[in-house]
Image (tube, rainbow, N blue to C red; front, side, top):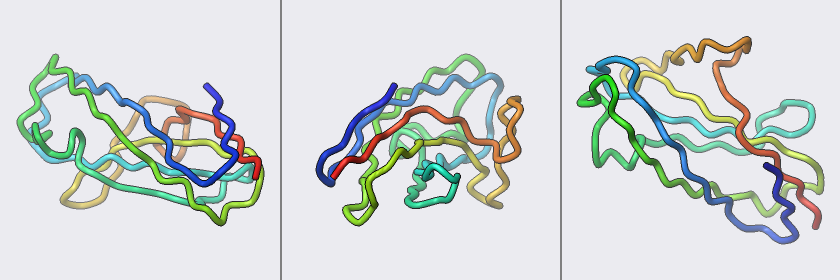
Length: 116
């Protein structure tokens, strides 16, 4: 999915998490906005689902719907950016593995073209 942004705004998206096992600990979601070179230009970290259903209570098979709003910095130059997500343990900031061929343990979920 690609969005074209003509003015500074926010990007709204929905994440759907499925617990593949009982979690037993709290996790934090990270959202990274990267430029074309892979440099981090904006980020946010938050408890999934605004902690209304803490991940330490998630059990195998639970589905969690997580509505998110990511601010887009007004000072970003025109260009193509990608939005990446990931998870880490809240208590020690260790990233959770995603079983993907990536060293960052993040997933690109969205492409954004800024055209001011």
